[in-house]
Length: 499
Image (cartoon, rainbow, N blue to C red; front, side, top):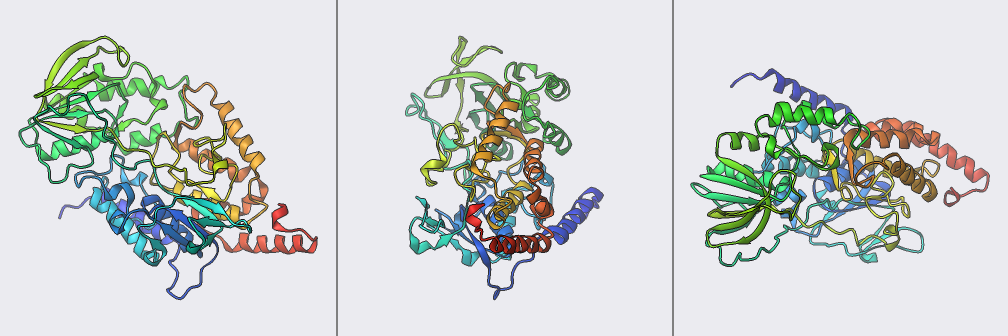
């Protein structure tokens, strides 16, 4: 076996993080305390959030609409050839996660989620085949999920993600096409050996389709994209640097990373580099194989609009660089034997939450820290409200959001009031008023960390919770302080609801 010192160092780092930061799973006879948390969704986010709650001694119940095969969320449904495009060091959704490679595949990811689910005894805390249709409060202010028979909860974590059922957009003439048509997430058991493959779409789903094409040795691949999308290299160092834009928007310095990408990454493929829409306006594709396949002559990236399908392929309006969607171009038939619809997924709905969480101008993603609706600080929609970002959905922030929710429920003096939650949203909108999209429609991971730091620093009563919020440690001192505060308030004849 080859010796890889960097991989060995990475394994050691993961072992240290597990020992230092992973909360201990409770013993089977441990009685968990309140607050009790309802978690909607048994995907990566839901399982990670539940593990943090259980590890810190708080009871949970996970509600999953699908059966046990759906454990792992979107990762339970994608192709076996799919894997992480970002480095796994940026996908540490729990301190106990131990990756065996830099870019784990789907099986490794689902395995880590399942191990976490079992390690924290979440089997008995998960209700499969239970779709959440409503979340409402009882007279005591506790949450009821669907109906009282499911119990009552102090807080709710909506962990439904942003990818639901596959989206299959109908295309004129597809009934006459003589080849195969598949969604990019439903390619297991299919083969593209020796075939001309047409991929419709140029987003993250196109990456999934390209992984399949590369693994099955297609004769040729044509990506038919309506617009140019930024593509960044599959490189942990580069991706981390881009996420360091703490402003979370285009700045006067954005031309620097954009120019460097054009010079050193796009190089001879300047025609497919975006001319409008800056790097910090949408989620880029993370892939290095696209350009490799194009330079080998095994793939081509075409910009334009689909007119209709034909018997032998797709009639395509090929637009020149800079011409907007639907603009003039040159129509040509692109021949193919297989069409892969890289058209993404339907976004799961948060409509089961109370109606007053969706009142203008504070509808998602325009919530406190993007995940807490101002009307209900006891609800946190982790990874369920974002639109675009440079960063990762499976990292440190899951634990931070979860622990912030616990702090808000436990400590009334640390709990934000609706007025100040709205003021923070308004302030963030003002700071990003020059952004070409909404203030919360795009962010970077460093901006997200800034939000967390600001949240803790702005309120002195949260300072005692800082180590707990950011690292999940030192709960004893803040808990004892809260008990003393409760005793003082009770002595003054005050109750928690007054704070």
